[in-house]
Length: 375
Image (cartoon, rainbow, N blue to C red):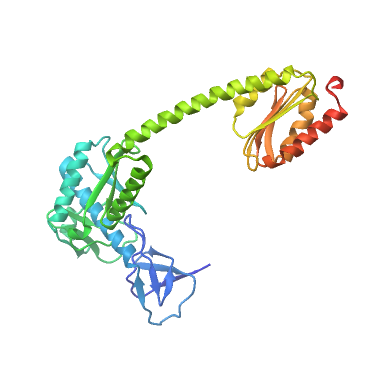
């Protein structure tokens, strides 16, 4: 529950033009969102305001300036990529971590991306001015402005954001007054988009500084973990992955051999109670299936589980069809798991492996009441 507040004027920008809304406070109370309704900015708050009173509106400047940097940077990127390569921007998104411009082209090369980044940062270093002018409908200067179309409910003068010598673009968003305030632009990558378009991902200014800080922190951590220099991280991780794959392959072979030996040992026992019950913390469906295949005899019941004894895992029950049909769902219920019967087996996943002993007790009780020879 909340209240929509409309002020006579406001410093908080409502979402629009691809830019998220501002946040801030009104008389110290947080504004949760700001949306546009015709010529009005609607402030959504948890508590109401008295009509006609004077209020103090404060903007979250860190969020505002971040949006100014990304939005002005998008104008620069879009203007230069069109003038340099003829790629028109069809949409853009100002995200929380990074932003993206969608270009009307199937492909954009790495070389073109580098050239575009150099041109953008050259304009930043040149301290290129940015200013806003207002025009009314019908003004001939509007014909030279870039726009993807105006809202049907537009009211009052229209704002044109001009980057000196580079771009003139109708826009309702907030912008820097000089490209030097962008600090620096990094075009991270270009990827294939939807409908034969390309997406360029970028970060600017404060976001770029934080990105470098995070990247350096990760690099130092990897250097410590891998005992390598930054340039050797990728090769070191590749070697480790190859070792892990080989170890997994060796483990699979060992589990296969262990499953065979386990089944053979059971079958060679001079006497047993008709139940092969086994739990291993390490194992998989294949491990259990091998044992079940080797002890495929309706004179025996096989109850196998793998996984953490205090957490979740897998289970398998096989043997005489009648016993498996009756016991399988009950075993699954005890283990708080789910399973299905197929071909004389009932197997599935268990969420409470700690109840395995209860399930085994149920099976042994069944065997005492219905020995294998009577099934």
